[in-house]
Amino acid sequence: MTLPTGLDSERAASRARSSSFTPMPSSGPYAPGLWVYLLVGVAFGVVLTKSEVISWFRIQEMFRFQGFHMFGVFATALPTATIGVQLLKRRWRRTLGGDAIVVPRKHLGSGVRYAVGGTIFGLGWALTGACPGPLFALLGSGVGVIAVAIVAAMLGTWTYGLLRGVLPH
Image 1 (cartoon, helix red, strand yellow):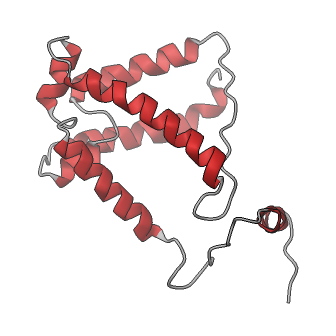
Image 2 (tube, rainbow, N blue to C red; image 1 turned 120 degrees about the vertical axis):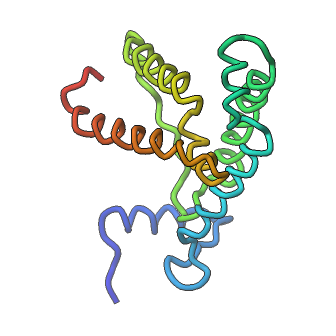
């Protein structure tokens, strides 16, 4: 029998302190695996498709201030996410893997990086007609040309990963 070390010992101690937490197995048929994330992703894609937020026409309608649909979705998503995170932090307090849910504080600084990043994100969204969330839902619903946007998003993420050390954070 080996004793846990490092991060494993911290997790074990954290689990032992929590009286309402029953540890999930880390392997075997009951362990949370990639299938959980696949099912959540499929459900998310269905919701995005049925709510029409992947519709290019809805997105253009929003950017032209011609319809309330997308703004209404955003207006309901923010309080839903806020309440959901607070419930997770106050009631369940654990991820599927047993780790504590922690939302780290953000250092806002002058806000330039958020303005630049938001502008790049918005330009990409306006040019492709899709934000990163529904890209795979669009591909799954038969919009094959969106594969170009998926490749571009992956290249952008890869480029950021390469340049992250020299960028002003």
